[in-house]
Length: 400
Image (tube, rainbow, N blue to C red; front, side, top):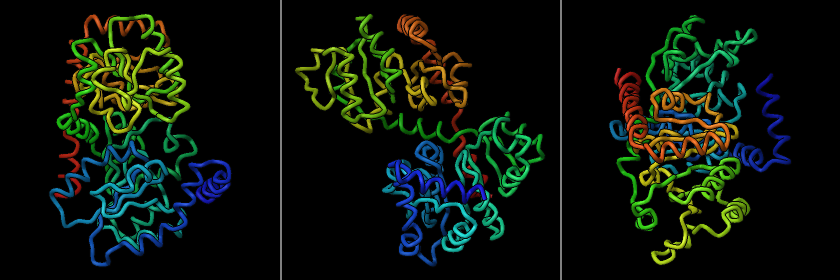
């Protein structure tokens, strides 16, 4: 009943919200598209992710599977329109589709149409109707990179019936010991602590990081703060620090690069900047702030950092901290990081630094610019110590 009400509300929201409208529109043709593209004799491994972040956690396993088991077809589904739009052309998936709304009828139709050999749900995805249907059809189903805490619905006084869906999994591969202990308390024992495949992913990205000659010319031998995935609340603090200090260069990579957001940043910077899309070897010397107004560069730009700042921590939550830490640089972020295990790991090892206002930001950056090496070394070591989840998942899911 809850699922039906939820999806009815999504349809109502589609009248007013662009993202909800994309979701509803995508749902209209999902079964027709699947019917046209599915190969009757193929063996499919089904990966499901809520959005892009979860996909990145499952991506190393997809890539390993395609390398070692090229005969297996992969169907990749997303719930979020942003995830689907950004990865609809992902080349290692044979089919990319929306997850049909998780009613009993849709779940049964999807599973019987795809006939997956195995199903892999990434991190937070727990759709009871799909899980029950997979179990009824004797399809092994796994949760990878899962993380649990006592505030989730499973573990509340009203969560008994919802908790049953966790027992539909053939196995749950969780990120940490705390999750395993919590599940054990409720007699859910089909669990292994496996870590987060995203650490393998960022290490692979770092090994193939691109070089940008214009950025190298801009940086030269100066201390550099690379601020990635920033939002307005981050930018206000960073620009204030930039105006008050003249001893470093700032590479600012906003999370959104539409004209309104960029113009707001330009006004705050008062002319002390150059846009990447307008940069030339000649005009780079005119500014100490480079605004990256294009997509797809951030993961490689952290290689130029003395210090990395990762945005989102003054809003709903920080973005990808280990994408920066893998380069052996200290990582600074806002106060909303409690849901992010990797951020806690960076803080615990001395490579991550949460700040809660301008005063703490300025003091932290001043100290790190004076002594960046030790903290950066700790951040890099932390990422390396967490690698290996993909190997374990590949062995336990596909080789046993």
